[in-house]
Image 1 (cartoon, protein in one colour):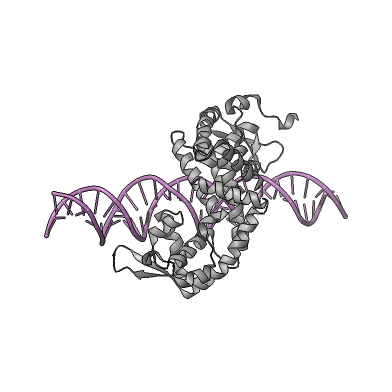
Image 2 (cartoon, rainbow over the protein chains, first blue to last red; image 1 turned 60 degrees about the horizontal axis):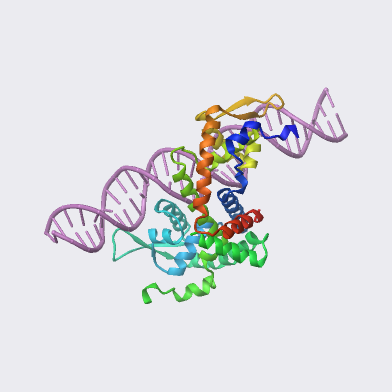
Amino acid sequence: MAQSAVPPEAENVLGGYALEEQVGFLLRRAHQRHAAIFLETMAALDLTPTQFAALVKIIEIGRVTQNLLGRLTAMDPATIQGVVRRLVDRQLVERALDPMDRRTSVLIPTAAGTDLAGRAVISARAITEATLSPLGADERDTLTALLRKLG
Amino acid sequence: MAQSAVPPEAENVLGGYALEEQVGFLLRRAHQRHAAIFLETMAALDLTPTQFAALVKIIEIGRVTQNLLGRLTAMDPATIQGVVRRLVDRQLVERALDPMDRRTSVLIPTAAGTDLAGRAVISARAITEATLSPLGADERDTLTALLRKLG
DNA sequence: AACGGATCATTTGCACACGAACGATCGGCA
DNA sequence: TGCCGATCGTTCGTGTGCAAATGATCCGTT
């Protein structure tokens, strides 16, 4: 008991603050766990969560501008730039000239990208299932709804 | 309507998969939002979420080994190494020799570190409050409980 | 037509996050 | 005692994530 005791002054300084009960800490852990499940399940297709998100959105919309894609997938311009570059390098996505705006190019899925996405979506469903596996059906819906409401 | 229409083949490929409804996507967004709130609120003290977590745990325990600290704060050895290095550089934490194990050193908070942590905990409570602000009291408890259960 | 603020994409610098490989040390078991 | 698998901390490479700065282009207003 003595060996694991919290030092007396720590209680005063921290005022009963419990790190592992804070939403921020729990969100970080939950996100890490999901990322680990995602990367393992998606290993054969070699897609990260952000690469997958970007690819799916490009297919869903058909023609997107890079920064708009970033807004739709919660990535800032600096981040989406790297994600798109890797997708283009792998020829899953192509850049086309935008006749309406010379600052931008339009992102279009390639046949290989569309094909890969089709297979990836199947894994993605399994990933959501695995991530939520500690929870019952009602709890899953509740968690999803609360995370949505969180903004 | 035509301009925002989903391409006909997208529906077939994606099979109704909705990115923004997946836990993984929502967890990533929620974690990003929290990190933004944290960094802004903690800007005056210049602590990141991981630096804060490590500092609090070191004070709570009094003497910790680096990898153990990483386990307690959900960071792998490579990550906790950089976090601790920055805390040591800022003289918030000290390394002491471990008489029991020559592979390790023991981490101990400095007076400056303890002082800073005391002020940081106050901000941290405000950060948790701000992060959960879109939710009602019951919803906050529910979300925290579900995230805990998630592992 | 010209100005000026906004947006686009890129780059740099810093901070997580993790797999993999490494050398040093520990600990248990033959 | 000696060996061998496990653990400790470090480093490297890759991929997010964001602030800030940059140059190009756009567009509304004058």
